Image 1 (cartoon, rainbow, N blue to C red):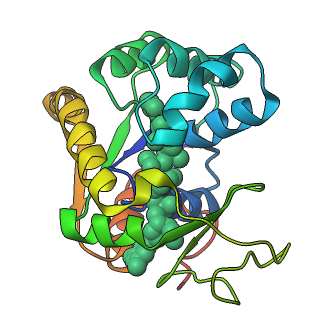
Image 2 (image 1 turned 180 degrees about the vertical axis):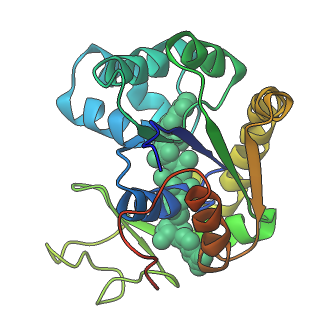
Length: 223
Ligand code: G5P
Ligand code: MG
């Protein structure tokens, strides 16, 4: 099979499993995962101009303004011209999708649909270690000791925006912003949607779709 440079996007609301699915795709197909959330967290830690601008939004779980996130992500993509990539969590608005098109139109868009109640439960079960950004989940990947970071032994906290009332508002806002993005990709015929309450059940379908586009570098792993 002729090797194809694949540029793929994984979309989905907060807590839908984008990070988990992207990790598996990256491992199985050797694609480079580019996470907008991770770039933002790195900018926050670096404390430069962009980090200061983004901080107030990220801490509250609000969408960072388009011009800020677009600047960060397009700079990363420009470094990788001609290479395959996998975008995790970008674009989330029509403005971002248009900015991405100016660099490269994605070949494949994976959209994760998880019921609202499941997302609410998942996010309100999330606990973080503020100093490192390590994320735990009470049910899916709990810390070794309840309420305590595995590596440092420091206490875990719940983000303000992961409390149930705040989660509902975040999910509503996500949906409004994402709708025109989905419509754009659907109209181009590149959108593939996957629904379910468990990442482990969605994964085999995502894997099969990717296999129809590029050869895997590692056989499917169970985890
Ligand atoms: P992020 O970092 O992109 P979110 O809020 O969109 O953050 P998050 O939390 O990273 O999304 P995810 O990647 O969709 O979620 O999901 P995940 O991390 O794989 O899984 C979520 C949790 O559920 C984990 O604890 C995981 O272990 C668990 N889990 C996964 N699957 C299952 C399952 O099957 N069962 C169970 N029980 N648990 C499971 O963005 C962070 C912030 O940056 C800004 C925003 O402020 C955003 O809030 N930002 C942007 N702003 C504007 N535009 C953009 N494009 C932006 N990108 C980021
Ligand atoms: Mg994520």
